[in-house]
Image (tube, rainbow, N blue to C red; front, top):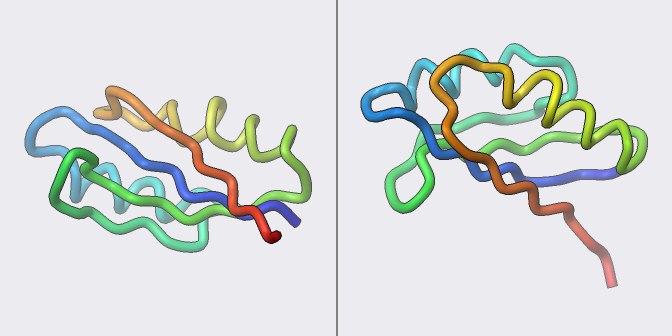
Amino acid sequence: MVHAYILVQTEVGKAAEVAAQIAEIAGVTQAEDVTGPYDVIVRAQAENVDDLGRLVVAQIQAVDGITRTLTCPVVHF
């Protein structure tokens, strides 16, 4: 299982709406609107890195109001 944080920038005034929509996507375990350089921080999981990529590109980035994402996979050393 691969876990990741996805940092999301949104259009002005869209953070809460975007976070609520993302929270409904299968594979997303948490979506919070925050302040700072990113507007929403998402915690997600997938079976492998390829599935994670599909989750981000095909589902999360498809949410209206998103301008940019940055995916940060969790690593265990």
